[in-house]
Structure formats: structure tokens, C-alpha cells
Image (cartoon, rainbow over the protein chains, first blue to last red):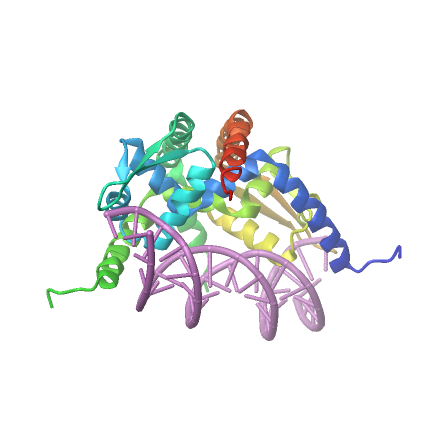
Length: 134
Length: 134
DNA sequence: CAGCATCCCAACAGATACTG
DNA sequence: CAGTATCTGTTGGGATGCTG
């Protein structure tokens, strides 16, 4: 069928695109950074190793589920390492890998940009919002 | 009541934290970058101005709604400018502002990091997944 | 202490159809 | 052409209760 609806064309494009996205390193990384807790965990661990419950306390408001989930995915990606000490009670330490430290440098770059330009963004927003008028 | 459940304590912490997050430039920026379409729009416009429908075609798989939503929020943040030419039919051009170009530089940095390190991430994943055994 | 299994709900992406 | 309005499905985050 040579005739497709706009929706079908978009759908097809979406499929192609998803494949493209999946293979795109930049997008993979952005997906990772986009996670609310990831940057916080990395930032927390940048200062040094921490235990599970320490992280839970340092990163206020995180539920055990999300903390575990975040830590697992970061461990899988080789961003941090997980070390279990089979004492009673058990003790688990998390620590950034060299790759994780490298990532924290990138976060620093993002932070620098944010601090340098966020003011302009705020000004732009105020300008924009003040025209939402009448 | 001096006694709070763990959930209540977390809830309180979450409220405090949300306030903190709201004021944190880095997190604001990450929120922005985290948006799936934002980076694509910025990347598309980095090459030069584009019309609405051109963007819709270039960024495959995006629905009109998401495209508009993304463009509006980026306009509000001063990342891009929107210029309406009241012809018939109407014509709308989008273009990165200097701030937007500055942001695209940051995206380039992210891209560079991704391309340099994504391989390590993939290796880590394979290693991790191969231990998901027994 | 560290973490998993389960349920639940809100938020949001996307499809669709219509308008200036 | 460049959107807007509305509806719906999916996802993801959180609460809760239990285990090694």
C-alpha cells in the first residue's frame, strides 16, 4: 500500500527513529542523566564511598525502591561499584568507579553551564510570562 | 507529635528537598536536557533556522503536540526565538538564540563524553548481565 | 541493615480530530 | 500551515509489608 495516513507515516518514522535513538550514545547518556536520582547519587558519591543507608539519608526524600533501582542501574553501567561485607548485620558500600568519576566531571560541566546561564533563562521566563497577558 | 513514621519523615524530607531542587540551577538544567525532544530540537536548529513543519519532518516521530510543547518551553526559556510571518498560509520560523547556541555547545560536550565512554558502559553492561546467571 | 515483591495512583506522552 | 483541544494508554514513582 503506497498510501499511508499521516499517523501511519509518523508511526513508521517513529519505529525507524527509535532504532536510531537506541543506537545513539548521546541519547543513551542523556537518558541516564535525565533520571532524577542519578545525578544526586553520583554527586553524593563523588566525595567518597558511602553505605546504602547513608545514601538514603543524604539524598533526602528518596524511597528505598528508587534508591536501589538507581544504584543497580548505575552499577550495571559501570558507574559505581557495590561491595558487600557479609557481617551481621550486612553492610554494603557503594563507590564511584573511574568511569563514574569521569561522569561526575561531566556533571560538573553541566553545573558550570547552569550556574553561568541560569540567570538568563530566568530573565527570559519572566519576560515571556509577562507577555502572557490581557 | 514528635513521633513520625518513616514515611512521614521521608515525606517531610521530600518537601524540603523539592524546594531545594527547585532552586538548584543544575537540576533545572538537567530537567530541561532530560526531555527527549529538547536535545533533538536544539540539535536540529543548531544548523540554522527552521519552519515548524520542517522540524516536524526532520525530527521523525514527533507528534504536533509534543513539538509545539517543546518549542514553547524552549522559547520561554530563551533558548530559541519564534517568528511569525502573517502571510497566507501563515509561516513560522524558529531559530536558536545566542543562549541556545551556548546550550548546543554543552550538548556537544555531552555528545563527546558519550562517544568517548559509551563503549565502556556497554562493556560494563555485558559483564553485569553475564553474571545474571544460574 | 539492605533489599525485594506487590499494589496503586498520578503524570505525561501520544493519537485523533478540529480551527484560524 | 501551524497549531489547539480532548481523550486515552502507558509508565514510573511511591507506599507498604516481608525476607536474608
